[in-house]
Image (cartoon, rainbow, N blue to C red):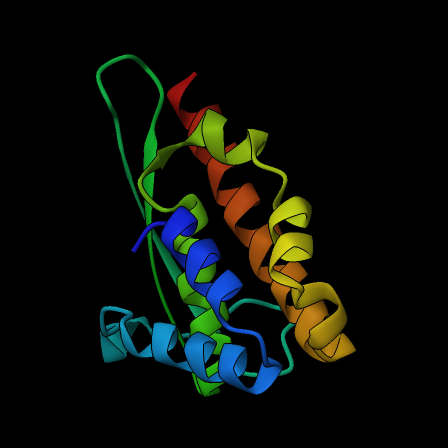
Length: 142
């Protein structure tokens, strides 16, 4: 599912209970993360829930690495937030990832005012981890 499709679906849901259920449904669409990937090296620091993130980096032939993400969490709502982030970032070049400002999307979806401070901090930590992976991929490609 694309980020545009997710945004459109959010607009169709008037109640936040429905939006929370939709976020949880999005989490169920995540590809399973291998059990071996549930380790400290892949754990995202700064999240109240357990969150693991793996990154596959591949060249695109033009010198700009493409990053694909896989992840998991022990919390259903967080799995949904991961799915939203992957729709925004996964499959994009490292440069594109660094150019994306997720704050506008979070504002549009209403996540900022409807997530607890702990969840918001966790979301920021996941974005920081994705951006760090993009920066590392660019540094390695240079």
